[in-house]
Amino acid sequence: MEAEGSWMSENGKNLKSDRNEGSGSKSMKWLHVGVFVLVSTSVYAQGAAEKQGAPAQSTPPAATSPVASQPAPSTAEKGAPDIDNARYVIGPDDSLAITVWKEPTLSGTIPVRPDGMISMALIGDLRAAGRTPMQLAGDITEKLKKYIQDPNVSVVVMADTSQRIFVIGEVAHVGPVPMTPGMTPLQAIASGGGLTPFANSKKIYILRNEGGKQQKIPFNYKQALKGEDSQGIALKPGDTIVVP
Image (cartoon, rainbow, N blue to C red):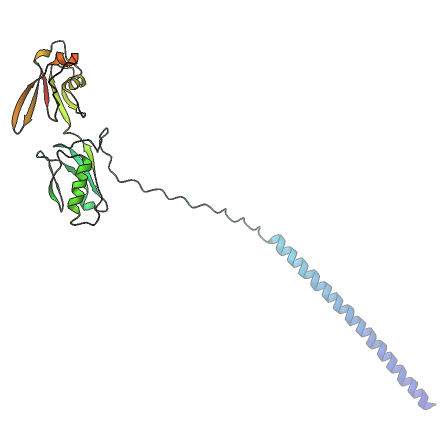
């Protein structure tokens, strides 16, 4: 009986111990769950706070299209108006803009000397009078081929001071008159404003210097008015029409 009582007492202790252990295990489980919930809530709250406090993301600037490059301004010289480079005949005292591409030391504005010549580096003296700008550009190109590979030359008349005549005497406007291709004495007088009431139309003449000598060429004004001008006088640069 004592052994049986002792056994029951021992079992009772073990059962009580097991119950205590089971209760402790359950408590630990609930503790773990509580900690997990607490941590999750804290993390969620922290994330929400960060989202609320975070600055709004700025919209990236719209991509701007690159500005199209502007063409380089042209450096070509602009010549005197109403000049056809294919037909205009260069004369003494004209001013020429000569451009040699990529050769600034050979380019510039060059006057035509009274003897009709121009002077350029490398080339020296070259006749310009009596040539058109295009012809002169070809002449310069041929000369420069000795020094430059494939030279590109342009010639522009800046001032056509050689292509003019003079009208003096009894006309409305005395002075120089720009000469156009094929201009006649009658057209030149009309460009000068025509004759005054005191003009002697029968004694009009033209003064012309050629070879150092001055010529006096009579002009029949009345025949020219009637279209019967048989003289066929072609004006030349530098001529002077005298109306007594």
